[in-house]
Image (cartoon, rainbow, N blue to C red; front, side, top):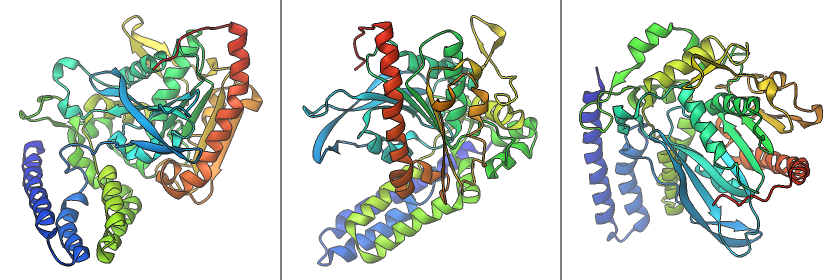
Length: 432
């Protein structure tokens, strides 16, 4: 396969990157700083603008946020570790932070590193402590760690949600894009086991019923057989990585997906980069480089996960038609039927963008019909006019339109949640 050859090309590009960093260091002594940064950024731009060629994703680096007009320190750590994903947290620990709700943000496993949602995390820190699924590159996961398909994804989210079982704070689960499918599956299975639901569930731009108005991704996933996908989309990790021998959907194939299926986001970030570079605006250039590097930081995905997604989410839409079973050691090969109708006593918010070319209209709102046991006044639907897929969780539309709706949902959901908690008379310690 092509993986080893592509990795050699990445090594050459890393050499270019080292040269660009050296050029920037040399240019620091030039008499015209703006020109120096413009020249050095041309070298860096060659590397930064290519998706999937970074060695490791950039760090989140959220040190402080503004709470009620004051800068407050942010603590970051890891609550739970799994071979394929860590549950990372960001918490405000200042004296003025006060009691904080818990927000579990399920970042999509769709090829991007979770750092693409840095702005989302930073914004949500105004509302509570944020816990995010921080995905690992499948090329770095040893074969001994086993497979990772949708069944394992659901089990992992179930465990992560279970981390909050003894927490006295209200929990709000937010899932974005492809994570909406396993998140709703995990929450449904927990409800089927009579476990307490979170205060609210927010599903943003996800293919819960991919049969409705299929977008670019939906057409791509259904235009070829599963056998074709396995033969043409899967490669094997070469020997120099810890995951050598693991079958993956490699990042190098996702580069074309970004450029062809979602060109607008990619082009707009490059335009911001080029504009800042041409103006010699050092701060704008740093922001543009950071946004571009976050968006283009790609990771390999386990082959079984991507094939499960094509099959179960897109080709057979098994959650929507009520045939999805999730296997576990206790239930054998047949698994447990996922029944969202078991969900109750929770506020359900779905968010869609009217210009979303990734997830078609109605695919996310379809969750409401799947959850008839939730009280009628606890169903919320929000359509963001003129908003594309990425605008649902980053940028101006996220800040001006989506985030305020989330804040109102959190507050309203907690009123009912506190009543139920008082009824149970719980006195449980909080999760760090």
